[in-house]
Each structure stands twice: as structure tokens, then as C-alpha cells.
Image (cartoon, rainbow, N blue to C red; front, top):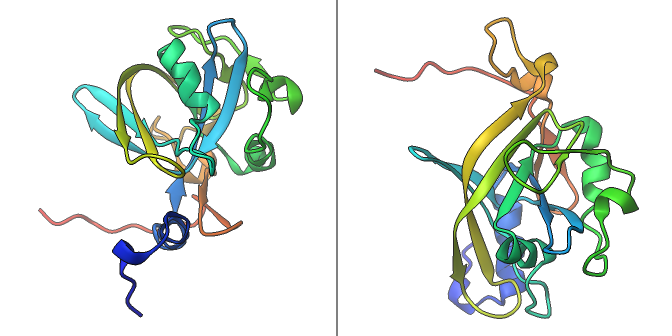
Length: 202
């Protein structure tokens, strides 16, 4: 099979990308509006960028009407956010926050997700998340226009919270204990429990 992406619709391109770029880690991003109302939404275009300075990125794409997501609107107003990682135990709650709510209605409150204050940024973090990165906006990079165009958000990591119960004997996070979920195609997910090792060459 050969697909010419220059001839595909944005929707078809999106489907083929999400069906083949696998697995994708999930950034469960909490933000706050200027009036103090909170937002929580999942994004599966997410990755670390570099360690000097510590930076990550996630990508809220415009909706099908070409409108920016609430997450982007909030970060434009209050340039801080928290990236919460999602274990299997919170997968259903994470999925519920993908629902389209009116702007200003809090997913924390709507879906009964416990929040806890952050230490260096204004948005709260998910209390039960095994890992939560508090970030300050570094920059936006806007790619494309209209439906499914990207608002790439780069964030400077200020601090990270890691639950003690996900650490291994070496004091570092154990992927099996983290039990994070990653997005596959459609409605399917994977977890970090299935692990194998390869020794990197010198």
C-alpha cells in the first residue's frame, strides 16, 4: 500500500498517522483560565524534547470547526500548565475528560477527579497521577490553519512530582509500577507493563 499524503484530506491523514505512530504517550494537561476556572484534557501527540533546558511538548490540534482547544486558550491567558501522566487505573477518568464541555466548565469537578495544588504554577495537578510535570510556557509553534491544524506547545519543566510507590529498588521510576497507558489507533491503548531489554551498543 502507498498513500500520497499530499492528496489526503486532513481527517484521513490524521487517521493514518494515529493508526501507525504507536504507541503514543498521553499528556493529561491541566490548565487554568484567567478567572481561575480549571481545565483538564488528554493529548496523545506528546513527547520530551531536551534536558538542557528541560523541555517537553504536546500538541492540541484545532477541532473540526478550526477552533482552538480550551487548553490553548487557557495557556495563552495564563502561560503555565501541568502534564500529568496516566496510569491504567486512571484511564477511564482520562478518557472522560476528552468530552467536549462548555468553555469554563471544569473537568475536575464534572468527572470527580481529585486535584491538588501545584508548587510552582497556578494550575492544579491530578492528585492520583504517578508523575506530574509543572511547566511554564516556552513558546507556541502554530502549524497549518483551520480544522486539525496544530498548536504545538513547548513547556519548560520547572518541577516534577513522582509518587514513591512507582519507584524501583534503584530509586528510579519502574515502568511496570508506573503502568502508564499509551494511545494506539482508534479506541485501543497499550500499557508499560510489557517490557523487554536491549543493551545499547558502545
